[in-house]
Length: 308
Image 1 (cartoon, rainbow, N blue to C red):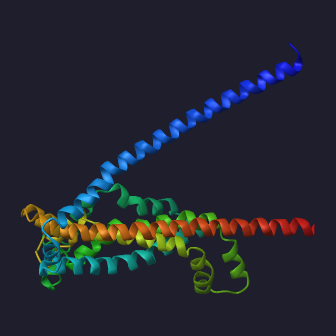
Image 2: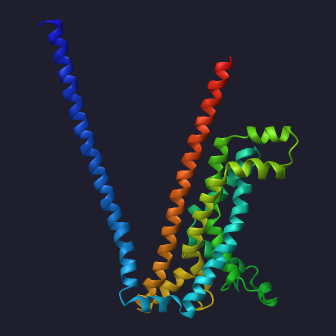
Image 3: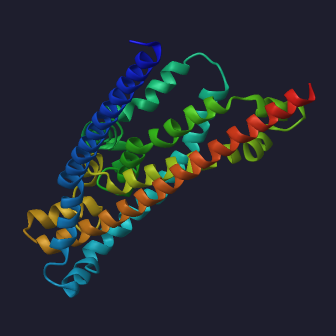
């Protein structure tokens, strides 16, 4: 057998092996896609379609009537108020915590990170019980609050506190890795040039993290509107006063008022879909910004090499 024949035979075997590997890879790829679509259909698409189907089963008039019911409007208003208070507070805390952790070294840094992650480990129901223990009538400050006619538990302040507790990690956890990846060279350059701390924050730090910050705010808002466990414990389920949208859905469902329950649930689902769309847009912006920054760095490195 000549060398040319051996070479042709080896090339043929290589092509056969590659074609088999390609066919096997395609089979695995399509199998994984089919499994993923089946899982999403079973646990996401079908339940989501069922919510809107049940909400509109008795007609559009019944659907609108369920949403304009005074108790439903009160739950919507309370949910928006709680989110409107909790999200800005978590925004300020998240920026401050992320800036401190990513830009500075100090004692207790690991403890601060652990405390930020605490709501991920603690059940929301336990968080609600903690607030009852502290601010309830038989709690640590309950008698003082009662004597001065302040209401925390079974009132708006308790709902806001519970919402803040379960949502405060999202902004910080989104910003910490982003700030650590960006480094602190630009802030140090601004400091050398005489910029104050506020000028560095507004003109350097915030513009660099704007998309990550918005992403964290969207996640925080979604969790604030959909929170059930902690809010359920501190709200008291007072109809028309301390029921948020998830709690109102539970009450309607327990009363076998399925059309109204699914109508309010569909509104929450719509908010979730809007949040998902915004989340996807922010992710695209983050990847786009990262690619632009990488291209700018490569261009700068090329210019430096050419000058040298």
